Length: 236
Image (spheres, one colour):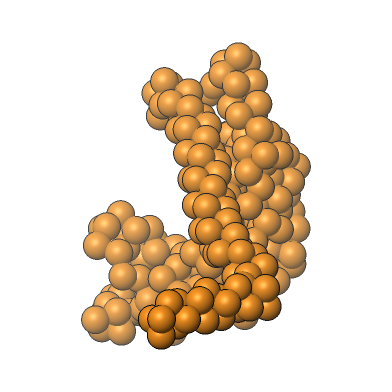
């Protein structure tokens, strides 16, 4: 009898608990389970979007790769690349692939001497929250295109006061080029000297180009051999 009453009491206790907490428990379970499957769905959607963006960008690369280095794209190829780039920009604007597509479109525009389009594409990439490394590359390319358009002051402003990190040598070289366009040989020399000192590339071509550039702006009292040796010592 005691056992029977105990069971009845337990049942009543469960009923009371359910009346007080049952709905909250159901809601909590639904939220947890729904949240889990919702998160899974979101992750799957993001992966699908990334895959689509990646495939679209690779198709652009395939079109460009059909031609020999330096060979201009045909009108049909250009249209195909531009269409793919616009698709990425419109549908995957937060993706790095969209930024890469804009950069590729800018390069092709420069090849066609369409500097206005190049600026527009690079500015779009810069405005769409690129990763730090991508941002540094886009900024440098945009500065060079601005310089090619004759906007030397704008180009210099874009590369001044920037933490260029692994691209410091390239940024300093660009500064030297821009100062040279302004006939400021002293500033160009300082920039090229910094570019040589911070050059970490093992490519001898890059080193030779920097040496050639600095030799064009050497102050009269500075010996070319001395500059070369000092720069190499700083790089080490």
